[in-house]
Length: 212
Image 1 (tube, rainbow, N blue to C red):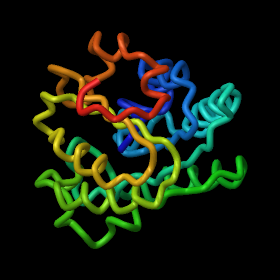
Image 2 (cartoon, one colour):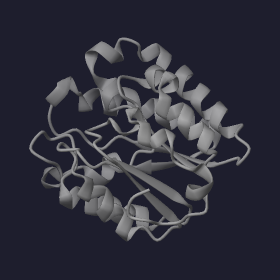
Image 3 (cartoon, one colour):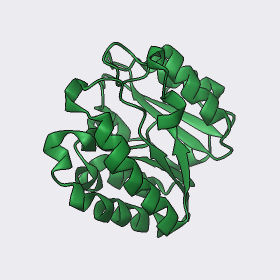
């Protein structure tokens, strides 16, 4: 599950409210997964800014009081060109940049691209987003984590069902919290007032109610 999500590119992610909120949350661990939406032609024309923007994000997160553990994740393999997403750009452009960032900052990498390679059956019909089986595969990867994790999902998401986050949450062995944002559709959770009213102290205590 993506805690920090790039909507139209790495620069937009830095400016976006979810990124500011995550910094205020002062997390113990951060998984940064950029690149899928960046691979679109209208976004990849700014490729020369990708590493600079990502490095800015890493530097800001490293400086948080919690001194979080930071992981970089490769994008899931794109099995189609839906939404103008390009797996060729991901493989030949995005992943090498993420690899360089990981080496420079001595960060661990989660290779979701290789995990999904050869398994189109793990994606829904658009060939981009994981289906229930794909969510279960990701859940198995999450099981390996031993750090506190916050899951966020909108209960009105008809594109990537909320049940997927619940499945990953159920399988996660780490201290965890699940935030279901009422009336939020796909990628809308952080635009709803609900997320601004969450008690950060409550979440950091790793309580696990079904709805916060």
